[in-house]
Length: 174
Image 1 (cartoon, rainbow, N blue to C red):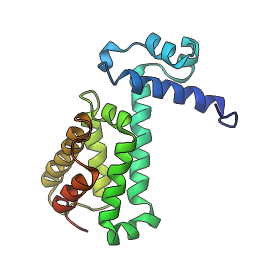
Image 2 (cartoon, rainbow, N blue to C red):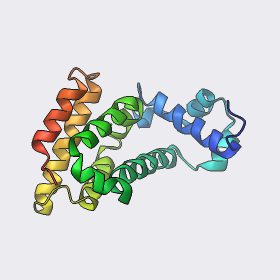
Image 3 (cartoon, rainbow, N blue to C red):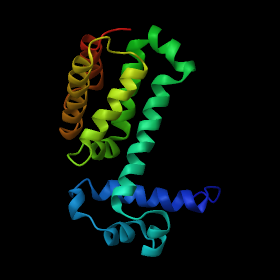
């Protein structure tokens, strides 16, 4: 492991990665702190130094990806470019999800999906991607999230290119 990574970051990363890995085959209510600690090769005291519960770890993971996605779409550098290269950004975003499939399967699991949808709605509102009413925005985001969820849980039977085309066809261009 890279010795330049601060110990705090390394321990928190190990905890988060371990939870993500364990949630690939278990529901949240079947995973224990002891299992996460064993999987991460850390002591329980290390876990409790950073977190009070597994829900806090999951919240950290959700906040991390919300920040990454939000920055991807809302930084001023990207936003102007996003408007002119919409197709590229949709494809890049879906590629990022594909490359981080384990994490996104957790974020789109029954334990997290409502929170993910809310985060996606907030981001869509920030970039003004949907000009419809709030109800129509909520409906559109729920559909987008379900499409991604189905794609991830079925191990990408649809090509990335085809999925990008579907998004481009149904998400209004800005």
